[in-house]
Length: 339
Image 1 (tube, helix red, strand yellow):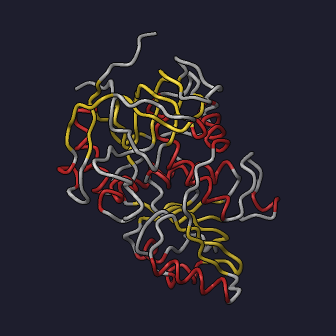
Image 2: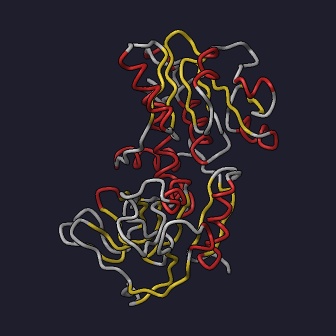
């Protein structure tokens, strides 16, 4: 196997803000893996909203740890070098990984923690693999936080978990996985999305689909009058007053885009022992969950929907597309993609 090149193409930004125009094409030395890391020759990376939110400064001063910064943490590629202490991979292995804190995905090579790197079987493409770590893991942890304990096709209520679930922004990167996983759990799924994606979300398995711009969609009311035991909330800007009337007596709303108001509401509900609860979710990547998601993809039980693909030379366009917020599924940058 050929040794990695000494330099690589990459995109980076050197300050907060700037959007797609803030990303600059550069030629940099190929990084070396430290202890517990692997160096990957990248095949694909997927952009998530958190990537450009970091650029906007929404998690300053924690991230980026330093400038200039190569963004994107969801990556797929081939192992070309092992850091000290890494024994569970070898050169040539196809893998996916998440390098959230250090980024590095918009480049030809990247280092990633071996502890959050998993094998990618031939049945799972590089684009599919790169799409899973953040979005699918978030959807999985969201449903688990709402009380779902099994995804083997049985009824969630059989295990004391929720029976009826609402998924908001169901055509987006997290939402489309949440719909599929909820159906794997045997739940009745009501979903919201824009009018152009009603058929798409229904095709994912949703039992009822609401256009969020209609009166019913705006109030989140199920066409069948179903009250929700759980909500996988993947949208932004929905106040608690909208959720409260459509929730069952004991219901959990798991919010993946919580703001200050949501955090305050969650705390108040906790100290007052409220039966209806808002739970902010912060993704904590777990290797065993990533392995499970890859296996579900390999078996054809979980589908990755790719909205659009861009070569590295056009990664700014992919970045701008994500910021627009209307992607159906995932936005992928392919390092070997056609220019």
